[in-house]
Length: 116
Image (cartoon, rainbow, N blue to C red; front, side, top):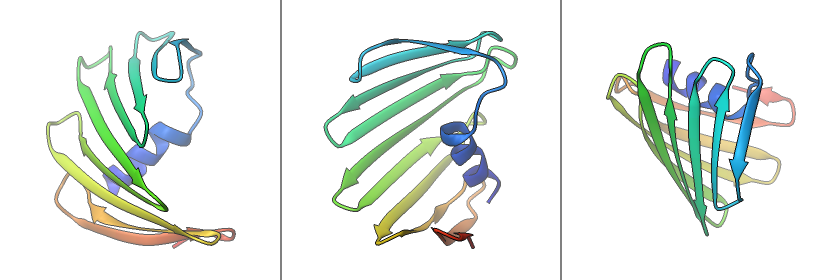
């Protein structure tokens, strides 16, 4: 579950350092005051992201494909381990399942009243 929290945090949580982004909706590069950076490429239903941690020199990546109300994401964590996640939105809820970068199964759902 640790990797799931990290991924969601990367996508949704505000960054403590101020980020500056350049580019278009199809390709964007962002860097923050600490020298960390990430690239986002968006083509149709596919989004590819790569990131770099200036403090550790590590990199990470993820690739998401959306088909209707289902998004499938595969990623590589900074330690080189891979992870997989499938999300399906039904009404006001999102159901997810997959495996974290340690090979542990993860699943649950999120709705208007929180996640479980």
